[in-house]
Length: 277
Ligand code: URA
Image 1 (tube, protein in one colour):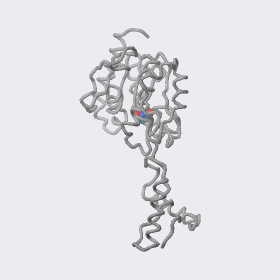
Image 2 (cartoon, rainbow, N blue to C red; image 1 turned 90 degrees about the vertical axis):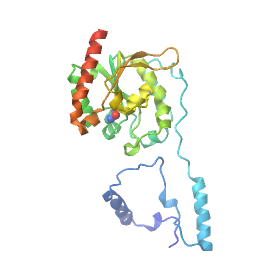
Image 3 (cartoon, rainbow, N blue to C red; image 1 turned 30 degrees about the vertical axis):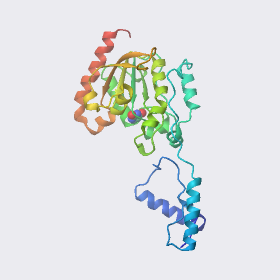
């Protein structure tokens, strides 16, 4: 059957049945890097003059498809220095083109907490609940994180929480290095504006991104690193940083909580040694 656009020939019930079939097969969200109109595709048919015409039409449509928006080029060091507080940094992020990640997300998940927090925790990326609420670590991992903080006498209002990414990757896919790098300058400026005494990287992606490391979290965790927001450049903020396991990993591997307990005690000891409230 030759059809170049099947949507108008299907009834609402048929379209719903197709959707239901996909849902039953486990397709519950779009995971491609860009929206795609499958109805605009012509089916491959036998080589006949009509098929050749179809192929040409299909090629023309392919050429018209918008290319997935590439992540914006990384901002240069200092490009966000005129953002003097978290509010103006947030406004700048809202005006920034975050590419497909941003377009797929329900909300921007900027951060939670106040400037001046002594501890800044950085996770990987917003999950489904965070995407819905626009607040980091409010889902199951967040509940465990709250308990972890409580175990060393901290509550959420004592800390500032952010992620290496401001938008949930569709289907929780791994973001590309370009997507990570595009907004890293925002995260670094955010850390400078919060001004923590200690940074805690939750999980491998956060540790690798912040510390520019390639080792896995099992090797990185439990060691203090000299963190700088502007490695190799003057200025910025420097403070100790400790990578530890991500709460989501602990939910899957509760036996690893013992190691995280050591990390939490190390954070408590560091804060006590640094003094202040
Ligand atoms: N996992 C993260 O890394 N960040 C969140 O905000 C939630 C879950």
